[in-house]
Image (spheres, rainbow, N blue to C red):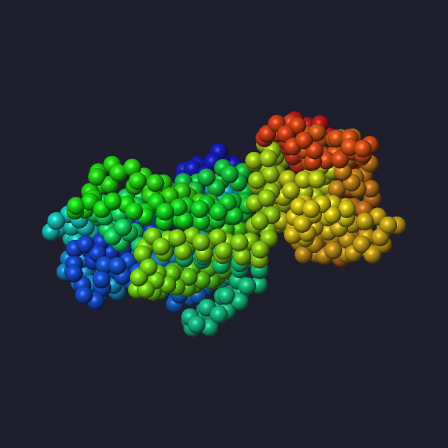
Length: 640
């Protein structure tokens, strides 16, 4: 895994470890969608197929494409863990050429059964590529590059979807010869992808001794059990699968939505896909900037909120639109002011879907065990397939029941709010990171220096000065990993922050003389955190400063280190210093009835008050001395 420094995610396109892979997956995604959308438009607008009505065409084609993910993902995940990923990618690209040659003949002869068969085979091609695609990235990118790399792949995928759909829609619309040209374009794109794949660097197998289980049903069950071993990862898989359920409803209905609701022609259907794809790409690229180049799952709740808000507004925007005498051309469609609200809703709901999905993918790649990472991705693909097929079935049933397409969009938007809330309650880490993200971006202007010293894996103890009631929230925002805090038991009595820290499973501690049981329980829970290989944070001053100065450090840290060594754990100690928080709303700077209190006069320092966190180099546990550690934190406080 490389940790090369680069200015932003676009610089990865100049590096061989990323660029050939990016363009290979780009060409494959473009080809998938050129083929599928041209086929869908041909059935919807050009042919009269009694057993495949236009309203159902997108659903049937989408379901056929997704079916192989359900049937063969378990096998493809094993192959990606057992064999070199470059070798598998080249094999998949060769298979794509064969499938597209058959599809070209299907377009030439307008043979719908052959094209439906090719839809299934292209789904198989994507099923084989999926686990390789997402297992490749964490092998070649560092933690600080993972969000940007995933954002680039997600952006590239949806730009490829955009280009493929636009090309498919435009080419198939050419009178008489459109279908022939679609066939030639599909074969050409497949050949191009095979050529580019030759330059992908070797990616050695992560589990070469794995014995392949060719039974897709038993292996599917095994993969799902494997994913379920890590609760956060498994529930993140469910969250991603829901996003694909949500997106599949919109993507499958665009041709019919354009024709029946917006009264537009094929070019209008293509425009909707352009807007949707640009939105996804923009949201995906924003992730690296908004996450400060870490895996920031706090963006996921923000994305879920936006998805619901704009899906619901799309229903209201598409009600009561005037119908023309005939059909809107592209120019006529964009000339109607009411249509701009529809396009804005599509762009924004897809942008927020990008913010929702990229951090989830990066989290799974980061937290999944490397030896079976591809099989975890395969489990994700299985769940995605189940959710997308369910999406097609449910949308089809709702249409048969007489529900309109805008009403389906409204229902999905409302369901997204319910599902998102349920997931965030099951996995509080998402909600906590969202609160931390909001605090560090919207309440404060939070700048972190030295965050590369925070270890991305393994046990470690964070030691920081204690200035305010939101110190823990800001530390959460700075860390790419969850942190378990040891905190004064009195802070849990605060109405909102206390509930937040309970949700974060913070460890309450009381002085030994005051409550020996709570004191002993705190050290036991702290020891368990370190045994589990997680991050533990303590505020060694023992309480929030009352004068803004660094207080003497208490010796609780030494007891934690002694306990850790007895358990065979030697966690490094990471000194940190929060700067410029004294005097802010959450610090004890106001005198009320002779007592210093916080949370008085919210805007005493204005909005977006500048605060910071300086992170120092790790200290080996055997070299920790409390006075020396305090001096290090004091030095970080003075640093600029």
